[in-house]
Amino acid sequence: MKIALIGATGNAGSRILAELSRRGHHITAIARRPEKLPVLSGVTPLQADAGDVAGLAAAIKGHDAVVSSVHFTASDPHKLIAAVHQAGGPRYLVVGGAGSLEVAPGVKLIDTPQFPAIYRAEAAAGAVFLDLLRQEPVLDWTFLSPSAMFVPGERTGKFRLGRDQLLTNDKGSSISFEDYAIALTDEIEKPAHSRQRFTVGY
Image (cartoon, rainbow, N blue to C red; front, side, top):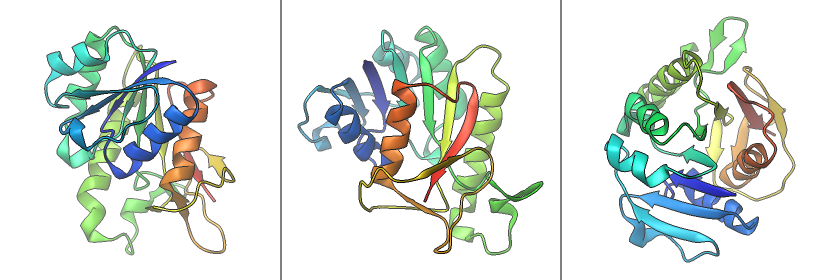
């Protein structure tokens, strides 16, 4: 498939890029500093700004799917969504956040007393992004939330999927960037959550 990846040099983005390359896809790796991108099979680096709607739309036009892996507080979801629409509405997958996941009926992780204040702004912005997507009348979107701890680790391929509830086990709630990339790439290849949010964790 031909896939555009916005934010290809970040923690999640770089792992997604590697996974897509490993599986033989053709990736347009979009970054503000494309010189930081690794040399990988099937990867075409491209400089673009996530805040430039027209420029981003031109960069992602003609792709089968677009993956957005950018910090919520450093981007504008209205502009990102507008660019996808201008590009002809390809499938749109967003690297989401855990803050909007429920830990109890009607209680989101971000609203719990133990949620770290340092992550509150990013989590709140992610929840706004998800709400905007849910209001989209036609866009084929998917929002994949990681678990509470989203960290470097191993590529095991062993994880669980859920919907709107935070996944936990006896060690807490976590997923590696590497296994998250597997789950997202699986969703690109075999869509199972069109116009939905889902989550991945151990």
